[in-house]
Image (tube, rainbow, N blue to C red):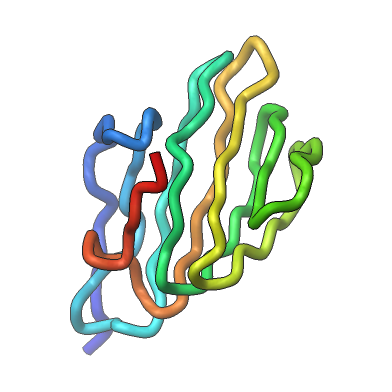
Length: 117
């Protein structure tokens, strides 16, 4: 029998963005997938995760900051690798929502998140 995961409702979080959990099951500890929506002009909270994360930009444009590197532009089709324990932050530079998938390996749980603000 296959595991069935249903997306949760979109929720606002303290990271200053909206999150919809698409796949995040305790029975599937190796990976999680969420859709993130950042409103125009918003910069997300500077933070780090203790897991590997990938951003897959679906639509919109922004500036991505990973580690101590200079922020760089991102847009549809871009994939950003964020190593575990690296600070990260994204700014929506467009006048439309920035949408991207967040893939965490292993799965995201609140205990892997550290605010750096």
